[in-house]
Length: 253
Length: 115
Image 1 (spheres, rainbow over the protein chains, first blue to last red):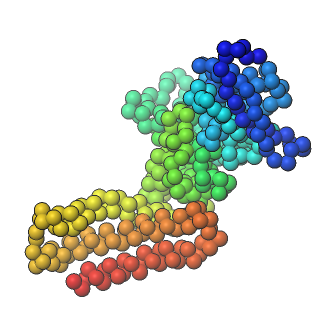
Image 2: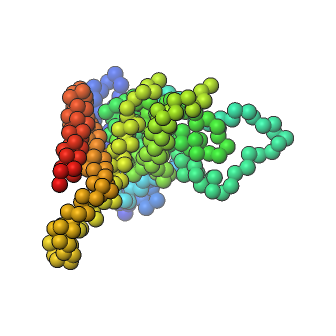
Image 3: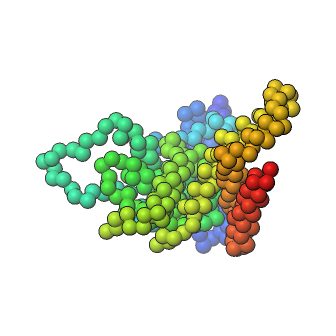
């Protein structure tokens, strides 16, 4: 337990046990307020020392795995990259990510995102794969810059939690999936833009977005999904107009 | 799937309306809201009327009015859909918004042609 000289901070943690609780309730825990402790360290302290029944998801503890997204004082955050001292003297309210069904305590059901993600074909598509002996697909630094920021996405789903459109329209493909589609569309080695087009330019794709921009504001990796979506809107609208003016120009396989 | 959705065209009108309004409205506001009232620039009525009657001026002002109205229509439609959660009234909202933009554009054209 904390020594006399150790400062403490209160974590108000959302608890929900399926089959026992009808709705989430807040439970308060006192944890040591240490300079280098993130919210995740506070939760680990609770689990190790105060209440072993608390459930939350985490893995790398260094902002790469995207597992520990939570709502901290109302804002979607990676709990490993959000420090206790920034919220002193507290209390700090820790809740599960919004817009997702809660499985237990701070653990949310991410099936919806996992179903949507492969729909945008988020991998390099080549019409003909060149043999390994031919060497790498070369790319200039400028070509790398085109898509690099979108490749920083860690699938943490903070953008889905922040998106007001996703909360109103659960069918919306969502910020990260569209940004990842653009990550490959804008890659000079990729030839799959046509394959991604139907999904992206459907009503549940880019056209559902009303450019609120919260996705880009909360992204912990500096990706700009809102920008990716607006950029694709221009691409899709230009394609639609081309198609209207020259109906037979588009080669469909 | 959904090849014939009007959304891309409505969005094009919305985004071009936003752009022309952002570029031109501040200039017009400066000229007619600040420069002329403060006598920084005092063109004669006849001079302004001559400028306004130039076909190019009419075309540019009509483009600004119509596109800005379609910008409003698109944004207001989604404000009603999401902000006020009225998506169940989608049909009357679409008629009100884009219909309003069409009516406004016709009025703008009428005014510009009759000055």
